Image 1 (cartoon, rainbow over the protein chains, first blue to last red):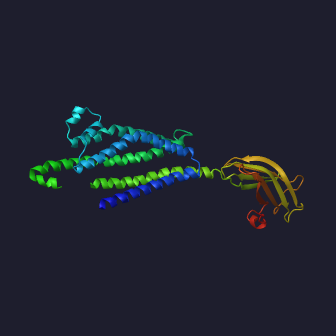
Image 2: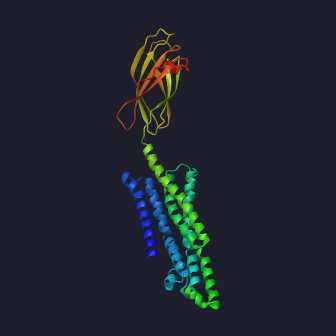
Image 3: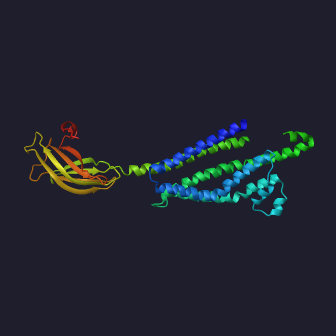
Length: 191
Length: 163
């Protein structure tokens, strides 16, 4: 019962948030024309979302799976192995806890690609802001693309930072599990 | 949930505020710039200098707005002071045909009536400049009263132009 109310409140907040964002976006679009700067913002947002898509869903799935692991839930190990770009024989030899940290490290290549591309856009935006590239017409549009990319970069950074706190928790959990069976095996089944 | 994660979520929330502020500011400022760019300004007379040899007034007119203004013509009304024998006169509809670009200044040379005496101290010349802007077919005017000499008392001597 308590869980249902909590779920209801969370869904209600999500619906309110989405309605707020929709009104904020649709209002100006309906009342006034969409300017080239707005299109630049949208383009930056979509292109960088395309770059970040694997990262966003990868970190999201990693956090979900690790939370399940920490709560001793059932995890589909074959599904986790299929997401990691390493030889399957080696992955089969790993314990689930190691597999999770390997999965996190496997996402690094997308992370570095994303941050490098974002840094290039940010650098050129700053250069045009300080007029170091001389007079150019695209400076303002580049800034729009930069802000669109920043929204995606914010989501990536948030998930990246949160996901990288989990290896310590995995380690502590495994250490606890290794220590327990010798002293008091029934305590684990109760917890 | 670890202590570290709580701090990260707090920092991320703060960062989200800044990025939302930046992105929203960018989109809003562009919208406001677009609308402000459509507001015509009235020209401002920054300075008026009388050239005794040419018998003409040099008006420095500035366009403080983002739209170009087209000066059409001017009218001068001469009101004699106590130290001159010249009679009052009005010369109207003298063409200028000059465009002031946005945020630029031009000098308009206003010729006084030919074969009249040089201005004496206390003489009042009221110059009305008529102009148009690109968004309307209407003609607007700006009126500049110029008093020869006594610059400090100029505001007392000049009548308030009718709106």
